[in-house]
Length: 151
Length: 151
DNA sequence: ATACGTGCAAATACTTTGCAGGCTT
DNA sequence: AAGCCTGCAAAGTATTTGCACGTAT
Image (tube, rainbow over all chains, first blue to last red):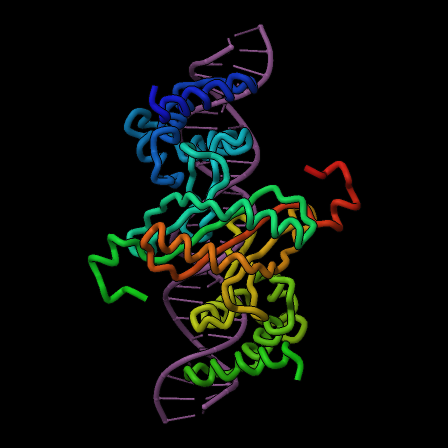
């Protein structure tokens, strides 16, 4: 079983475990979130969903995503002013990097983050619940296309 | 001259240098941003501004903040769903920590950030323009008040 | 059978825009 | 004097809510 299918099953199980009803619409949204690594927005999910459910509405997507967010089966990446993005493939908090040219968002895998969090905990005395590390810039692809964009 | 006044003057100079008009409203907004370390929202600025300019409107605040943001004299900290916050005291990108109980936002001073950025640059090949590190949790004050909130 | 979910529309919150008149330069 | 700035209102975008009907359990 590939990791995407695994996520799809995990998400279903979490819904059932918490007595949420598993409807066809929810299954479709789960599947979209489980299989898409490109951090879709609500509208992206809605557009895909509409192919199978032409009468669905954005409200349904918002509601289902809210449930999954609360169950920690999807990570919300807040981008004020251009719609939040969601990561259902890897729902634990992790760093992202956003290209301001092509608007793609990629995951970053970074060893230093744990150390950083320890340092911040010691320094602030906070009980830390969530760490958001988001970098933006221009990705190598876009740099190739337009060399004059380099900083 | 204290550092807040210095920021106030710097912001004025930047406006003048770029041929923006220095109006009483703008001066008042600059002063609010230069002197407040608590990362005010647009509405917070507007509320303070209204004491001296009862007929002003949020649009004016939005417009002035947009100018300052573009001139890099204020740092926008995006919090989707509850209004962005602004840092005019320290307008260079730096980490913040937000308390989910009292909603205060504090600066973090963290040595490891440069190293992290180098690592991310090497790993991704991005030309990095902006780094956002935002932590949320419960601050020591709120932990004292409600010990059961500890993670 | 019951309670929850769906989908429509209206409401909310935040921000941007258009425009007429006023003020800074 | 000229053009930008202000402040009002309206429009725009993202998201939430209310409600009647339908469906999963």
